[in-house]
Length: 384
Image (cartoon, rainbow, N blue to C red; front, side):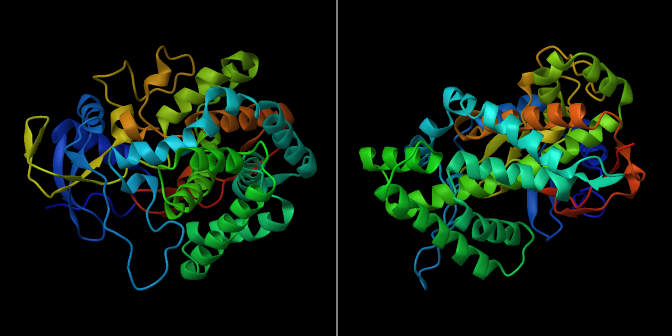
């Protein structure tokens, strides 16, 4: 059994996934940790698998040797009907109307961060812009005040970088519970208040489930957006004709964002699933109990689903049909907010820095993380 997901996979997953998709679209492989898993790579199979209730996300219960903490059970550890019950608590905070209400403030935050940077000779897009911008939007949407923002930033970044994780989880748990107490005393119009109000009105979940949900929303909405912004800028700089096209016609931006989301993603695979019974996918029988990884990155570039998938085309018809945000019951709750942030950030970047280019070859960039979540550590840019 092969292990194709190690080595330089995080830097160039497309080459590995394309080979699997064409030669063995449902392949039994080992993860870099040595665990056997079935890899599904063709678009039709991945779409069908997202909707198949026989592929479960349910995780085991948290350890009983300590009190419950945030992130012990997240939304992706549940199957319907429990998943549906808990997801309902957050859905009102992320409707298209609620997300659209943040548009002007998000655009202003992007412009303000770029104005503070000015026009130096060089910047690191990730540390100098993407991370502070995404965190500022997170605080805006969730109504995190300045006093708590620093603690939240420290805990979230430590968890992402796997530094002192026990302390980071404790601090994240404390911040979430403090913010809930503040909203009970003085509700606002932020996502924390909306989720809390829905929870109090529904009576459908425990307080532990509420804390888990809010912690997941905060954590998931930050680093994925930071990394996607870096990948989007990298893709545009690697395709100067498309970048020039976008500069000439800024109205293309919504379609461009969907194409950039299709083109590359920090998460090549959906959350690992487990087969509850024997399941046949693409003519291959996956035995009961097996782990299953659905490759959204491979599906997004499947030539059976779209013409010339290995060409970046910012005017691609039907571009929103990509699977980067998943499909079915587990479709990403924050998809509309992520698109809003990418649209605002890229629009501001192209306006404020009209002549950016890579400071060193793309092949020399450093990647961390693993096959489930890739991280571009830095994106050095020259601005002149």
